[in-house]
Length: 100
Image (cartoon, rainbow, N blue to C red; front, side, top):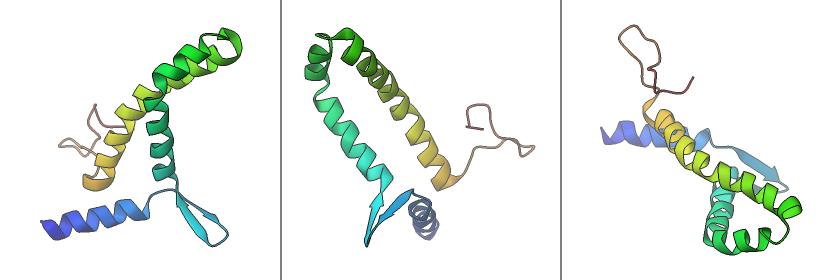
């Protein structure tokens, strides 16, 4: 069982998005997670600052605030599919709660 989990984790690591910049390789997910953590920590402050200029800062900030919960719901589900595979029913079709 642990060998299977280790194999699936290795596959998941290989499928991660990576950017090559010169000799340095950057994992996209790690950088996105760092940015999201900073945004979540400063969310209250940024909201109060964005409310001072609702057109130029408030609308884009509202879009960011709408995307944060979506990220929290979709990424764990995608990670689960990469580790254990998509959920399928008896006929080999993806289950209704699984992503298409």
